[in-house]
Length: 437
Image 1 (cartoon, helix red, strand yellow):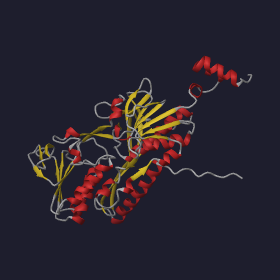
Image 2: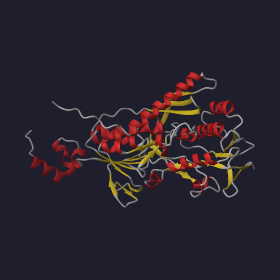
Image 3: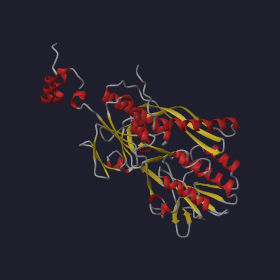
């Protein structure tokens, strides 16, 4: 076969487009679009990780990350800040490292998706075209799921359950300002919600703060559920460390502790069972749903987004992936570890589609650590693999009551190491350049 000249090559592509590819023998996508475009919405544990891995393994792909906040303030480990064990600044991470990898980081809010025209529109009015779109928007709060609560009320009674730095800071400052002997109210969400053990770790951390700084105070928990993740080890910790501080009210067939009225002016909550609780500080954690952009993209069914288990592509919208908290991952919990694991599978699928990389069977992992008290951490986790259209768990493990203190301390050290590793996956250091000669 004779060699084709550059000019002849241009004529073939221009005249025949994708239909001429068979003549040239080159992959269709390499000709039809020389620079594939990947747009990622959400710069958290899922989105930032996808950006890193796609860019690392295919520098020719144009990667744009759209994230409203200029600083990522991690939700994971934020309970430790509330408990006085970790600083707020230690949770903050910038996006400079991703830019150093030549990822286009746009600090704007994605407001709409045109799935037909394959564009994402932002609040500033800019349109970003894509060949593959990754949505990792986290959660939105369903404020009205707690009667009397609202977006405005959250400025007085914070949920502190997303990456909003101000919400975490507000809750901590309210605890600091509360007089010793005050009452803190926690209103728990019903299933499903992000990070199933998260609210109960927070209860431990709030109780730890009260125990060490305001020992005459009390934490009252109103929970619409009958049971919760890692319950045996949490209730053991409540009795062991915070017996005179935490009052846990789990719902039963007789007593339903779902909050039916929140009176911000009177600082009082009333449950379906008729229990009334007066409080000084309230941490209200309402129901949640997928971030709004996933809904506007057409990926959601009711509150969450169904996905194909083998690659986390949307079941509803072509060439779109939904990962992390916004997705319906069945047995796999909504956690940062899950999002990070899913992100690597998404990146691998994109690389196979757009860069001709090898595709491997997906396998996902999750571990959730929870700090009960200083140096006393518990964990739960499993491995997940696609099976019959769902995620099939295997190798499950969970901490047990009565474990050795050394093991619990080791769990905590392990969680600290994980935090450093996931941040490095999200915001990788710039590779050092090797000099020649």
